[in-house]
Length: 245
Length: 348
Image (cartoon, rainbow over all chains, first blue to last red; front, side, top):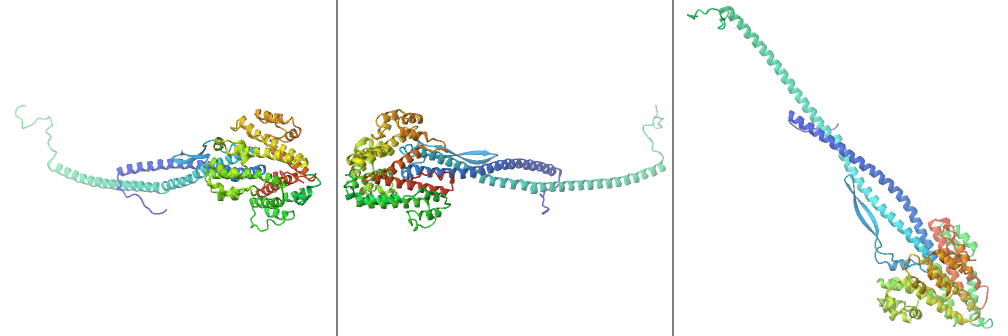
């Protein structure tokens, strides 16, 4: 255990209550953060699984799309240059949304079509069906890429946040709470010692008092022997000093 | 032009073409090519064919696009040689063959110019067989109309533009519609020209061009389902020649889906067979493949007769098909997608 540090505080009952309050607060904070970390970890694992799935599917889809490209070239000749020349603005665009998971803002990318198909008539006289297929395949590949992009960015952000949260959890668990507990035990031990001192003082005082009483008693007893019992005004026997009764 | 006088003007070239034809890659070579694991293997096997060492100067790693370009270059060299050696009317015939590629090039250049791409980047992308002198001059125009008035009116394709497109349409039409309209005018013109050549050439080329026209009509119909192409527009894209003209065309114009088209084709024996053996499942041959097969069969027939120009047309088409086949096999090898590697069209 490193360092016997604790919070320096004057040990009093007030301090004890305050420290107890702080301990409760720290424990509650610890359990809340742990819950957050667990939720984030579950989501993290889910995203990881989806990323692996998407990546393997991506490999297949890209291969398929490249092959469809070869088929289309076979049926139609070289249409690559014509398509390249005809490009104007993007037909498939990406929107970003923010998704909130256990307090973490994750970006989500969504694809949407903008405008009609500019290449409707490509391959009208030759190879139109292959062009159709190639359009579908590459569109699938692009949407898959977009999904993969959102998954990977969430993955990176979540990783960071989980590290931070776990650091906090560990800090509370291994630093803050022991410190408070040590302070508490110090306060309690101080209070106990004070009480013992007090007790001891009391006992000593009582001892002294008893001695003093015993001495006073002895003195009283000796004076009684000398002067006889003291007259009491409350005796109802005849009082000599009264003339008429 | 008959068997007696043909060899005076065209004998050398016919002999040359027949020589080239026997160099076309055979089935055995295709089987060898299909066994290749890498593109370098492919290059090795191609060395034993007529292609020889055409790839020897290319730096490795080889790419499919380089193979494609080199094969095309070989065809262009052979064709240009024949073109320069020929006299009228063979030279006009060979010119007609190049007009098809010219149409593709013009469409590419127009699209590029309209999108403000410089001509110097577009010229290397054109098909070399379809080049014409005014290609460089296309950069001066910025709208289609200017383009036509300044440049295209001097090319051999000018009459095709006049035939089909009026001034207002030219700016609004989709470039593909323009391409198909031009091609239709070209086919009709070619058909008429062949008729003037008489005897064997006319017979052979009529059959071939009729098939080409019908194939385009059927393909345009099938591909226009689901697009915004109206039925009237569709009718203007059908070439006015071929077996399907005119009754087949009116039936095709009314067609609404694949089954209707098949029903129209039932009336014509060759096309019925093509439709029967094709289908849309992955295991069956597509209609396009069947059309290619039929075309190859027609082209091979050209070499069975002598003293006609059809052999030149057939040679160009067969070399193109061979180009497509080799590039297809190369792509399958490069992408390691061996399942469909036998999807090429066998020639000899």
